Length: 195
Image (cartoon, rainbow, N blue to C red):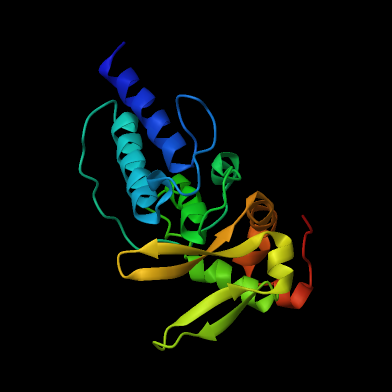
């Protein structure tokens, strides 16, 4: 096994862990497992992307040069072929990480979660509320809960906090409607694909 093969194998394990799958058993990792914590998942996606770059460079670490301006995120066929529903409910940032990791980071901006959640607010699946500390929080409506968007209370360093999670059904809904979300034309056309 070459060094490049070892890198590819390691990347496949990291990708599976980042997507909530035990690479040894192939089963979904328990939602309360530390490996499903947002910070760790982001770190795993970051490491996976670094390994991807090294693998694409034949195993060589090469510093990338920054080019001109980047275009807004676009749903390409390459991205469409990589993105899939994750087997466990995840926060929107974790779900969208796979879109952002599949894009050409030299030429394309990241897909911001606020674009997706803003569209969900416009469509009536989320609503905004003001927290006691003055921060805005987006929470699922009844229609959002029917779609597979729900709140979960978690314990953090500073006490309990609520996180909005998207199950496989909600993730598929977002994949099916991503072109509409990106085009911003959903309000004019009224086109909405169902689950």
